[in-house]
Image (cartoon, rainbow, N blue to C red; front, side, top):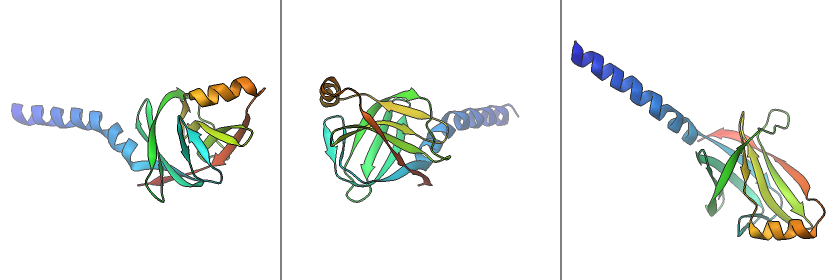
Length: 139
């Protein structure tokens, strides 16, 4: 009887710890981005991209077409929704776009500005925000 109780408690504890990890891996945000854009020092071509939360401070952004991608350090932020859909928010400086925020169902993540973006901020009075509506898909 004692072994059964210990096994049950162990299983429940393990489930409580691993369930959030399993949920992170199941859903991803996908979006068709109609322009070239930057994340950190890397430039990406227009196309369809998937965004997955790796952990509380890291997102993975990856091209659906060729699998190229990047891990981005993020800070928690408020969710920004567009009619209930997840969104990707870009800062636009002239013809340069920088991914600045990703919002899912009830969470948001703000990306750190790259040195190149910080340089452009000093030259432009204010960035023009550009919203790309995404979809939430199960993997």
